[in-house]
Length: 191
Image 1 (cartoon, rainbow, N blue to C red):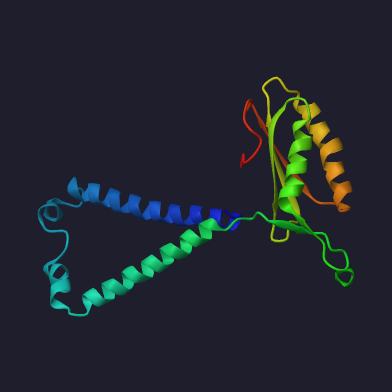
Image 2: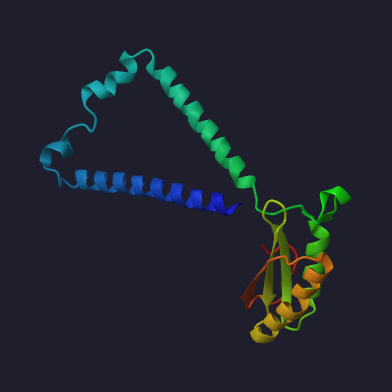
């Protein structure tokens, strides 16, 4: 998922949760008689509202259109969940007049993961090119309980990242995430 999808999901779920919480609290207060004894014994909906659907011929067509709209919005939301920030390749072209050079993301990330795994104390690593054109690398490293975080960080910053940048001949930004205490897991597909 993209960062944009994540924030939209959180906002939408928060709003839905607040609406449902408000309706639930209102129903509890109504049934407890907080609004007086009359609302407890009377129907929730007035007679005109209860018979509106049966008395209005266009109501069911409007309800069907609303359901179709909700289905389309739901399908759009599901498609948005499938999008990701990950990139399948990296464009290494310095001058388009000289031709195009693309590097497959899997080749790059596997090399970075393998080199990171050689550092003592690292039990697994997962690397991903992100952004639309693969302009940033995310490296997630699982660290053993016994490992020295300072040594691992130094090894990553002074060995893995410079080798990556030297191989690409670019100053590619690298985000490193250390996950302490996750020993004994495979390095592929951690995130």
